[in-house]
Length: 99
Image (cartoon, rainbow, N blue to C red; front, side):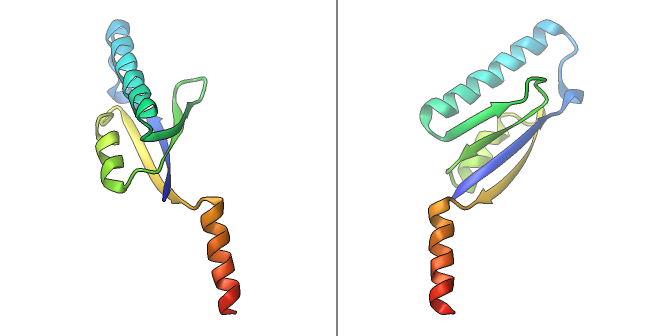
């Protein structure tokens, strides 16, 4: 099942030093790129202000936790299961058949 992951940067955990902040940001970007290249992350985006964004994954909950744990405490996450259109249609058809 597809998961929508929304995230928000926790600026209170961001280094004050610009050089250290850039180093951390680049490390996070490399981890995101690795997830995209491996296929674990299907889509990813960030708002232009760099404060929040989203990701989409079809990994299971254990894999998602392992992926997201790398970013804690710098990023806060919400993970929600989502139905694909094919899953939704199958559910609706099954409901119609029972009616």
